[in-house]
Length: 151
Ligand SMILES: [Zn+2]
Image (cartoon, rainbow, N blue to C red; front, side, top):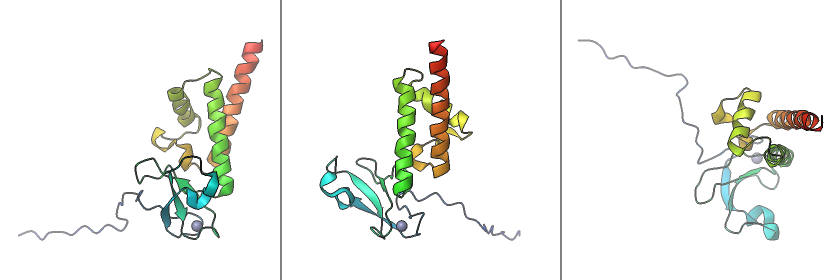
């Protein structure tokens, strides 16, 4: 009789636990809270939720939650990174608004330009560096395009 070999995985492949994000800055768990918890009277969408670091407000990091789900829109971000992600989104919107790319095309183009698999091409998950790259690439394309049209 063969002895059953037990396979011991040193690094068990765990599915990333999207339901319970952890703060990348301080390592504390994030807690789902109504947007009012952070924005107070400035809350734009009533009923929207956020994952907020349980160290908030000492640790000022949070991320939005997809409506009606427990899915975070990306990774928790501090003020600086949140601003960068907003700027990256704006840069991409400029490409769409200028008529240079359509909404689907712009993500395909971005994943090629940044050398990222499409699955990882979400600005909500981008690091500081990736946001900078996105903004740079968008501006480069837009400049080139404007140059050609003016010629
Ligand atoms: Zn934190």
